[in-house]
Length: 158
Image (cartoon, rainbow, N blue to C red; front, side, top):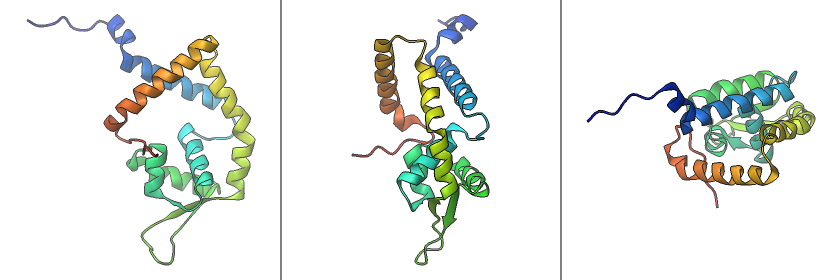
């Protein structure tokens, strides 16, 4: 027996569609709050990770921020061209590129911190406080339990 094809209403209620739409909305709010800084959410997360892990290599950054390996090179090139990070090879291994944040990178993180917090608050604003906590608990669980299925899994530590 064949099942009836999905309707548009079925698609609109599907978890994958709702997650994709949530991502679109979150990115739009992030860009609205950070207008003028020309940073994407993944660039911002990368800058924070580099700041917190001075000398991190590109491969570790991929795992730490869950960035697709095919896009990391371009992302780092753009951050470097803007003077926000430096890439350098240590003398003992010329194949590895260690990443460090510049003073300009630190300045942009300092200047955008409040805007990023505002973006996160705006994303959750339609929910009641208890709903926000429950939403974050459930979406965190969903992401953690499905991490292995990602094209760019997050390295789970400790």
